[in-house]
Length: 278
Image 1 (tube, helix red, strand yellow):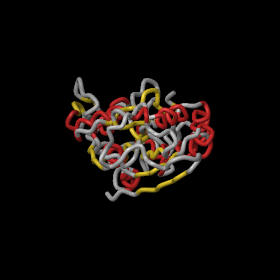
Image 2 (tube, one colour):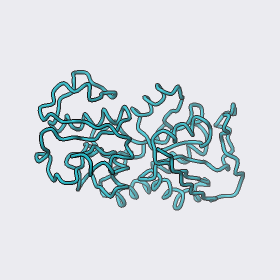
Image 3 (cartoon, one colour):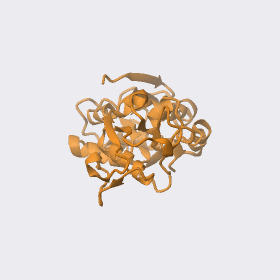
Image 4 (cartoon, helix red, strand yellow):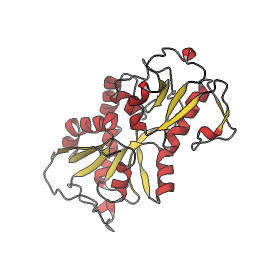
């Protein structure tokens, strides 16, 4: 899939426009980075890009932060861009996904302390089926094909009695770990961004919260089943390359992203489809 990027730039305070990172990396202590330089953050558009844009438009200037938001529609480029120094930080992922990404790609991206921002409930959606009990035997269900979100999707199906996973199946579970499938469900693994478009070709699809929102689907109103926020390990957070956690611009953005103003923005805009994690 070709990446689509949208850049929103705001010059909200005077000072240098030099990025804190270069493409070849830097040995400079991030705590000594220029606090007046523009902070570039990669994000998926909804809700992360929208939340960052709210911060840029309403909070950043008062805090003395210049913010550039670079939006991507996939789950890979925001991390490779941070690793390569093309952006300073990203905001799009949860810890199980980041752990898996670092392990597979040899990257060293880390969560910024105290910067967990929100949860997006994963939901099971269908075009023609209105209730979970109406899902027919032998139905084909589309799943996100990245490791942690596929496991998360399977755990959602298990929690709703559609299948049973093998004992000990963890955050890397796949359809091969299904121990009991009494409804003879079939699984179609697709890139997460393609899942909303697949609803016309499958009986149901487990769709990530941000892509559901982009497709005008609400976990609260449209999902046949949805994750509970209680005890959910999938909070999305601000992340950087290891060593840049103390960059003063990053620390400043983390505080803004976990402010009462952002909590209210999330509650007002997303009506339960996205919930604050702080």
